[in-house]
Image (cartoon, rainbow, N blue to C red; front, top):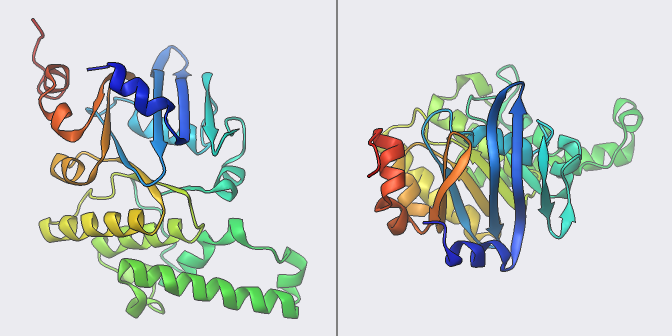
Length: 266
């Protein structure tokens, strides 16, 4: 279903614009000519079977892996080739498929770490506990608490992050990513391991984040969540884009059904 409507979305007011992304690992092509956009106020999903290249696409956008070829533009400026922290400074943050929290830190400290790309006090000022560093530390804590309130974890702020149940640790990662004040938030399988009600609560959180002004790019295997929250869906299979459209269009696309169910096309 790659038609004129897809082209229209890709050229109309995009915030994040990825063009013909290709990533090879030796002889393996993980992402092959993938183009997509995220517009302001959108929730966009990338779906596909295991090994389709979804997380690799995230890693390309966030600078974890260099592009083999292609271009990535954000807010009208090219960002491929920048380091991950430079991309975060510009307003792109992410969570990870496998939880990456600091278990020996408190919940609040985990979120404060996420604020680092926005901090201004130098290492020397912080080490000497100079007034400007102390003032900024207070501001960072306040921002951390605000983001913990967004995800419903403010009451656990002083607890060890390792003491949180799995679902709450997922929320902690989102709070940490929000501390960067991103324009685009990348969520990599945020519903993995969550129970039914937790997934429903996650959907409502995604809406609240979008409504606060942050666009969302979502990789997720939970199709009920994807079809419930996404405005637009891109489908990858073996690194290639095979379909793009609204959730209702994607659900009835024969190529998508074949990719997920392993059926042969006529």
